[in-house]
Image (cartoon, rainbow, N blue to C red; front, side, top):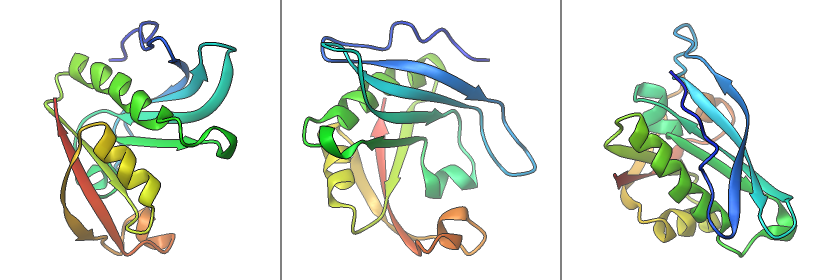
Length: 147
């Protein structure tokens, strides 16, 4: 089910796999890869990201991709570069599109989506059963990247 990820890198960053997770039907989770984002020049961890494989109701609101860049490293487009690497892995899984979601007020994340070629499909209401809603996020921006 999971592919080798040794090739997920470019001249600036590489993704270091630290775990995978199988699908969990009870929770509605799809299989996922979890990576550290590492800067090539000095092997410094600058953040993390994940790719969730497939589509279901959870993905509609939570997205196929998640990322965070640590505060000292923000502003270098590391998240969008990581997304572009994750797109390569998604293609290996025969995914034809990737959903990325973020909070309306998260302007840096919205810009990241735009930098990596995602198109805003809409701002959607998060249903009360979803984890995002339970954490206080009632609406989310839904972006799609065609692969």
